[in-house]
Image (tube, rainbow, N blue to C red; front, side, top):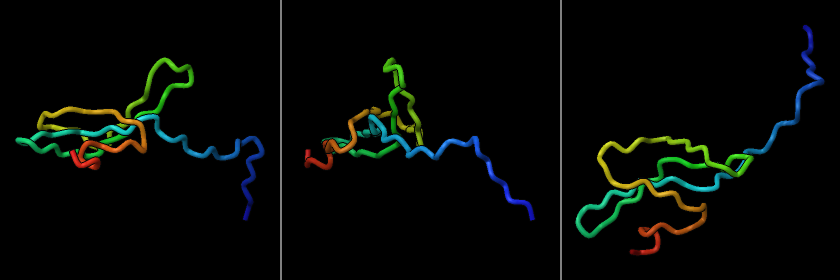
Length: 78
């Protein structure tokens, strides 16, 4: 059995942490419901972001980008 050895391959990169987390915010009366729907990574040239959505909101509401680790209004008790 032949062994595959690729000497030109680069070592695997660790995934880059996202610059922002994308949240869908749906307001019902006085309550806000936050659902994480994706993340955004900054471009190498610093001129924009790539947004990857795992879910697409279909019922209106807002999409908010927040830095990772920031509390959402719901988590903060608002």
